[in-house]
Image (cartoon, helix red, strand yellow):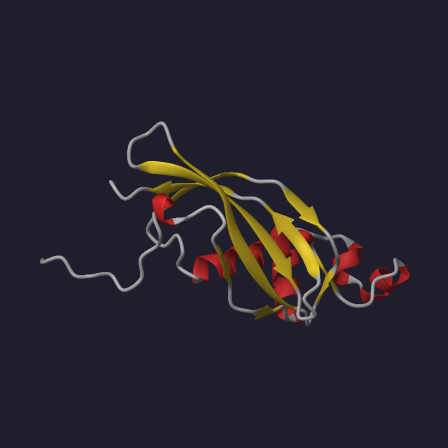
Amino acid sequence: MPEVERIVAGKTWQQMDVGSKFRTADRTIAESDLMSFITLFGFNEPLFWDARHAASAGYAGRLVPGALTYCVAEGLIMQSHVIHGTGIAFMGMELAVHQPVYVGDTLHAIVETVATRASKAVGRGVVTQEVTVRNQDDVLVLTYTPVRLIKGDDS
């Protein structure tokens, strides 16, 4: 079969310039998102499934686990296709939760490339990014710094 141009192709590590940024689409967290996540992954903490308990702890609504917030941000990044077909491995990260996220909040992520380097293997590079996740009021709710192995221009 002849080669057909791909409409969606991720960036290589050499195309991810240090200092470059992009913003993802928005995603509103629904009650069904919370219930599916905490049920599927066993987050049986009353803060997440008992609204009265969360209120007694000082929270203003149905509290969303930081892990779900992270997963939503990663999904938004994947939907941007920035590493579609070029991502090879997730190598690690640091993560910090800054503010609570509630059911009904609308989140987006801003992704900034903070470091790149060639890997030891030919045709691959290591890319470190800082991801800031913000809600509908532009409040910073979570940050993390994923380190990924990405294909190169020569692979």
